[in-house]
Length: 172
Image (cartoon, rainbow, N blue to C red; front, side):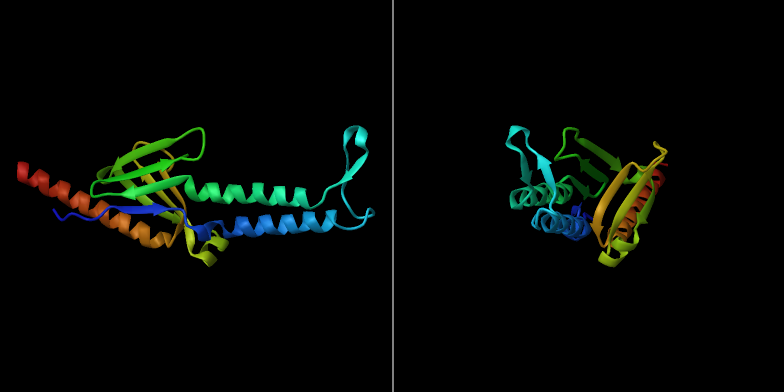
């Protein structure tokens, strides 16, 4: 059996570009609406102090909080393809962490899903099915060149099935 190197598959920074653009667009709108005169500004009551206008600090706070989500998405999951298993870890930046190891022999299907923006940025989601679940066991989201990694995974599954068949023949 030929040893292949372990391949790490993780979310690409390109996949969070739409989120970042949306955050900047909303932050720009907030800043433009709050920096105008009192007639157009958003005013909020602040207890006994009267009326305070939302200005630059609120805009910067929104920008920082808005950019935290795409950065967390990039670091939240990691997937490895070894010689015999697909190992997937999700929730590394959340309260609930989930790790699954699937032997290639148990994988029944690999599917690539891409929306219009994902096709433009050449990113997508790789879905992996096993016989043990009615939904995809592993979802690799935001993968750059998803078809390349899906083909690589399918090739490793085929190799594992061929090796299993050869081992059965050798036993009989």
